[in-house]
Image 1 (tube, helix red, strand yellow):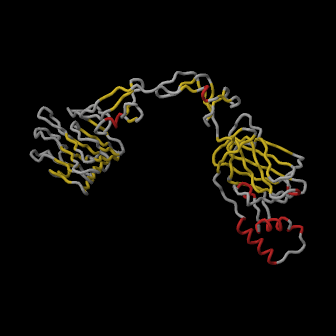
Image 2: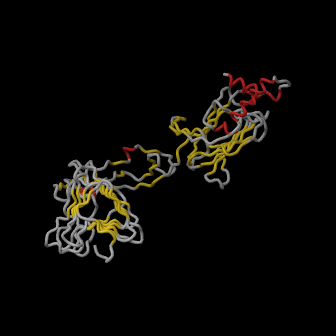
Image 3: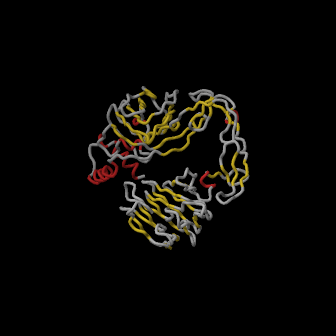
Length: 438
């Protein structure tokens, strides 16, 4: 109540011939508190205009406007708060502002603080998509005599549904004494139209019954301008169910179903719980790649965490490329080469990037090869590929075979970094590689 009284007093101060010192001090205090403009994040709600629901945009960033010699600066007209106001007392007044993101304006609402002499008689709303564009007039009125009230709503000329981010509201009256509390916009968020052609429904996408355009707000139309709307039921044919083929669990895979039409993987018969091909593998290491020198079970890791879901015994070679930061969580399970005398390669984890081994369970292990005739049977080789490779053992146990000179739990090349903090080693740490072999 006191704020409204102050506004009314201040709005008429220019015509007053005498003012008390206390009133002047109070008005100066209001000026100090409200004289700066700021940016407000645009908020949205819903407004129904002529039976159509639109998005109402409230609160914008004021960038320019008619300067005033009172506390009621131009930023107050777009701050999203009807308790503040803009009170210019000159001709050719304006305020420029922008939305957070481009919108499709269909109309605007302005609120006045007082009636009568403070009503606009003429105004223009302009817009542009980019800061360097010229202004486009969306609405223009002159010679108006508004009826009693303090909120006024008008449509924009934007039948093409063009998107704009920058706006300018020019307003005046015959007495050069405007008092507005808020300017708001209504319309749509930046809308685009995607052309849809007729297609049959599959297990991965809905069918389209008729040629149409889908707007980015999810509505369908017969035309690309959003004039003639279609009911969703007249456009969309629902997806058909997946056809899952059952695969029993084995040494390397969990139980899963694979759709015979789209080849996606699922963990339930109804094909509702989708998983990736990597998640179907018990090792969670991903797709096997071609091995070299007899090293079967060859995996190249990515920068993510791999959590074991079971023991695995077909891992021959794990490679962490330079620049990759990977983590293996043993989760209480064992990675074992399962080496026999018929296999000439043991297990190698080759670290050119960064690898951390953890164990969120109990008793997790990594077991190297057990064939003493093989040259490469260490558990972890930390190798420099033009970088500083890192190996961190935070949990679990590395088990090497010390019966052969090259069977080491960990070996490293120059510039490697090895940290053991919580994990254990059965075997030895070979240290700096000097002869190019593990």
